[in-house]
Image 1 (tube, rainbow, N blue to C red):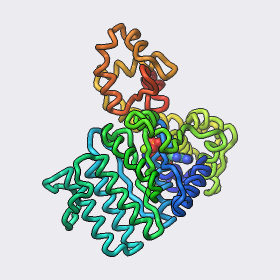
Image 2 (image 1 turned 45 degrees about the vertical axis):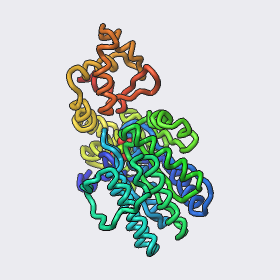
Image 3 (image 1 turned 60 degrees about the vertical axis):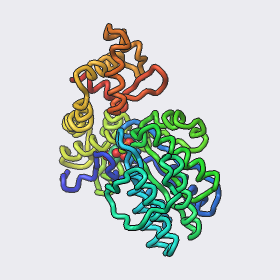
Image 4 (image 1 turned 45 degrees about the horizontal axis):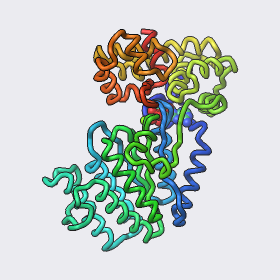
Length: 387
Ligand SMILES: Nc1ncnc2c1ncn2[C@@H]1O[C@H](COP(=O)(O)OP(=O)(O)O)[C@@H](O)[C@H]1O
Ligand SMILES: [Mg+2]
């Protein structure tokens, strides 16, 4: 098929040609927006799952739903070891400007900017943050130096302003697990207060599967404060839809055997479906695309995944860390006990804790439970063993 018209879209955060299997999520989020808009109680949302399952895409989809509801929104990404204030300050600045454009907040806008200035200046007294905020700080608001208190004060003011013009605001944070623990605690604490005051402020977070634990460890009540959505591989009907519908729109069919082979090869993981779909499309020369096309295309798809999806991640590991990953892969079924990894490598567990911690920090593995580790990338073990 003509590569020029290839509809498939493998890539981090790239909107798929067909967003399969998410209708109920989108419906539920619409209800949340409507309810919060009417001042009714609702919980914010946390999306958790492995890499490549479609968390970022879902987050962006929620953001555009909120925008369609005339909400003002902000999006940011957690980065390892980088504290929240600067990035969040900048995101809230954009959000406030949008809120003011839509609703003319008048004197309230100026006051919000001053509180925001207090919030960011407290983090960086020299004022070297990356956006212009030419107002004086508001003394006594969001400037205590305690992240939780300051974030709460800031968000409560933002929420009151939104409520005063009958709208809502939403903050979207991707890779939330990468934020320092203290920042997670501040976020949870602030949203606890937001929910108690029933203010129209939502947070939607996305992160690796251990995100719920991370949040609960920062504050025990996090468990009840948020709604958690675990995203995983797509069901067979959804995976079929993700593959078949984009081609159908262009008048191209797949034989049932070809569909079966791609579903099997991809395990229903969204990223893999896009990769296999793309390369199969490119090698096929007529419709329907058949099993032979899939077999040919798969070779190229696997090569691309090995380099782009798996390889770039493995490259981040040092030789010692790779040894650890190799042992995990050899032990097979995930998750594995850290003790079992040590035994497999014939080393005392203590000797391996540095490698393990680094792998956790780099987001290559996560701990689904005490004493257990698992890969954050689906089929990473298979990839390691195939090298
Ligand atoms: N619901 C879906 N249906 C089909 N493809 C999807 C879906 N969600 C995501 N994808 C595709 O999967 C890939 C990974 O999506 P992304 O949101 O970056 O995953 P994550 O953030 O979980 O790592 C992208 O190529 C995207 O187009
Ligand atoms: Mg993502």
